[in-house]
Image (tube, rainbow, N blue to C red; front, top):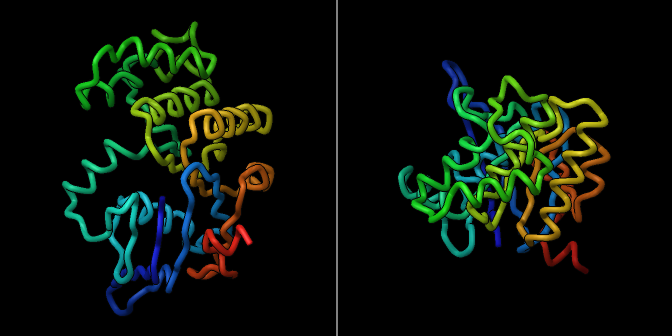
Length: 228
């Protein structure tokens, strides 16, 4: 499903070069749930962005369903993400002028999908927001906004969902509800789930944890090794 080989990422500074990731290799199976954990500044979010094709590595390759996305152009990566990838962010990233329904409909309309309103309505009902379709983000609580973001992420039936601190801006109770929703959808739809989180309870619910420290995995965590 997702294969990373010898991934290294550097950033050029004015007087030096900062190495954020060094020699990361891993495999993630279809339908698996994986948490990327580590201290702040360890390279977790950078790794997630490279896995999702939001950035390109300095060295190494990222392969998603046979496509080496690290070798694609920016436009080609954008097309691949639109078809195959979903995102959930800590800050929700909803468009403030659009209603909950319109936020979920937007990626469906851009993809030219038939009956986008019906599909978006079904998803919002699935995440418990049947009575909030016409509400804008400012009229929703943080937990409700994250539920809209999750519905939007699943709208195009992605093969993989990337989540960056999906409960980071939520209180414990609301975070638990969002965690339940992510795990339920991962199980029911068979969508591969890859998330960065500081939430130890959420990480523990994933089938596997990738521990990263100072830009390197701290143990061998290839898919075939974790299955042994």
